[in-house]
Length: 313
Image (cartoon, rainbow, N blue to C red):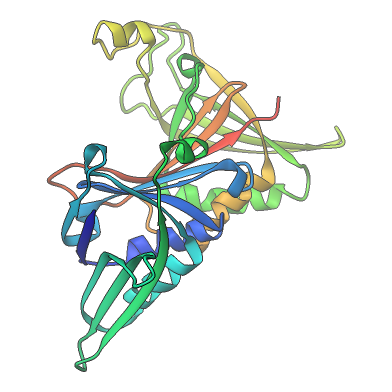
């Protein structure tokens, strides 16, 4: 089992790990030839499942990985505070070269070793981050991303990055009124046709809270794009154009402090965002998938972080 890589820029990875560190103490990390991914279980992140994925090309100038595991994969557990501390050092120092490699210490402890070659002196700074290699796949069961059966009824709308940041402020203000927030997404299909025309930007996302049945506060994001998902019948026939359906709305009531915590971690880490998809599965989940800018234009491998919020029935 071997892994060695040279950083192009550690900034985006550092911000991602800092964000995850605000949500949980440790996480599972998967390294493959194409991606670096992180997974947080609901039990460790306040009931919200979190997964993130970065394209290797957007982080490293070059990398090498060798593993006997399926898909040439290396999986381990790591404390996020230790990893964030090492990455901060990689990002802040004026370095000529920064490398990371998988090593084993004299006591047999597997470690991620960060080697920072300073540009203004013949000095090398080392950061050792202890990890625990996953030996039993059953250990990863709590980290597996959930699967839902209500996908056919899901409504997904696209939020520009400025709206994702603004959403944090809206949710923070709503927290003082209620423990829960009701999110309603409509896909903006034209009346009588059941089809959302491309470029119409008619989709909407509404957030609403109530207090003692006396006060109601709502905020609506209008002029959004919607994401049309194929139905199960379409998938079986390889046809990705859904048959016409009436205009749809989907609602989900989620615990507002969970949503606020996730949005706060995104904004406070100053991570660069491109856009986000807010997907509502009735009586199942609210899914917020935030896309990150990626330098992997050749492989077209997207980078993202996704939050799975349980709903209050």
